[in-house]
Image 1: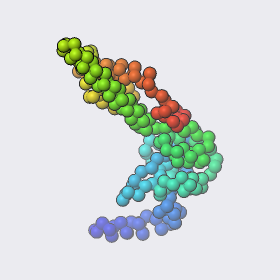
Image 2: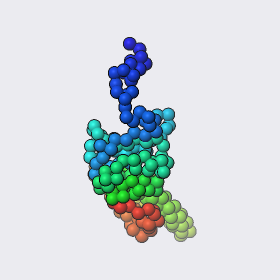
Image 3: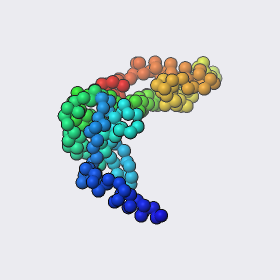
Image 4: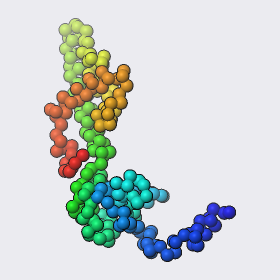
Length: 232
C-alpha cells in the first residue's frame, strides 16, 4: 500500500483525529494538563524545517508516556505565557521545581506560570558558562606568562646565560601547559566524576592547581554569572 494513502486512511478513518478536542489549535499548541507534575522542565527545540517550539515536560516521568505537558509553536514570552495559563491555576501552583536555561524569557515564563516553583538552572548551561569563563582566564594568564618568560629570556641573554623555563611536575613548562590545557576535559572530570586516563593524572593535577590559584585571586563570580541562580 502507498505510504501516503496509508497515512491518510489512518488519519481520516482509523484514528480519532477528526474528533480530537485539540485539533482546532494543534498547529499553534497542544496541552496535556493531566500530565502536570511536581518537577517540570521547559526548553526550546527545532522539530522540523528550523521551526522553533517550546516544550514543557514532566521530569518525573523520565521520558515515558505522560511526559509531555505542552508543545507550543514559537518562543515568544507572551505567547508561551498565554498558552500555559490556560491550564488551571491550582494545577500550576502544585509545581515545586522547574528546570530551565539561563534566558531571561524562560525565567519570566516560569515565574508567571508557576509562581510557587523553584527555578533550577540545568547543569549543561552552568557547565558551559564555567567553561567559557575559565577559558578566558586561561588565555589571559597564558599571555601574562609569555610576557614574563620573554623578559626572563632577554635578561638571561644579556647576562650570557642560557634560559631554561621551570618544568612542572607533569614535565610541561607553564607556558606549554596553558597552551595545551583543555579546560572542558577538566570540568567534566570535576562534574561527572574521574574519567582521566592514568597517564594524564599528573597533567590534570598540575593544571587544576595552577588554574585554581589564578581563579581564587582573579575571578569575580558576580562578573561571570550576573544572573542569580536559585540552585545548580
